[in-house]
Image 1: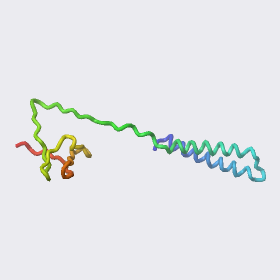
Image 2: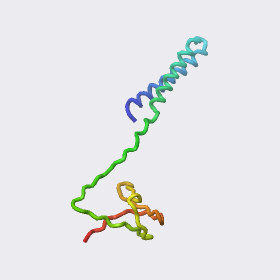
Image 3: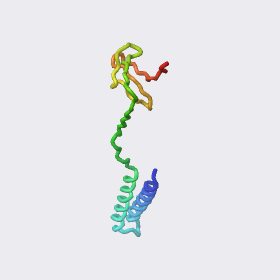
Image 4: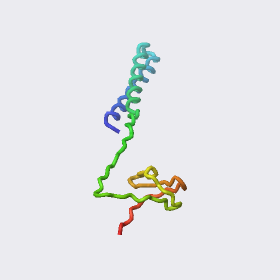
Length: 120
């Protein structure tokens, strides 16, 4: 929590406390009816400060990251087959989850992580 939010919460709490005291004090023997509007305004300002300090900021739009790979020479891509049913997988079936490529088969709905095997 940032410093201005903590300060706003403390000041808001103090204003609410004194505003309630003004309203309550206006009903006493030495109180005045003029204290009620002062107390209401003080409580209102305190509640506004607490509201502003506790509201969550608007979420920024999701950021899409595109990774472009420049491969040397001519590269041919082999067809990727599902380990369970042998169905052909498309690039749309591969998603990045926690930094690892995970494939979901559209035919048998099996989900597994893709691993790169050695070329030798």
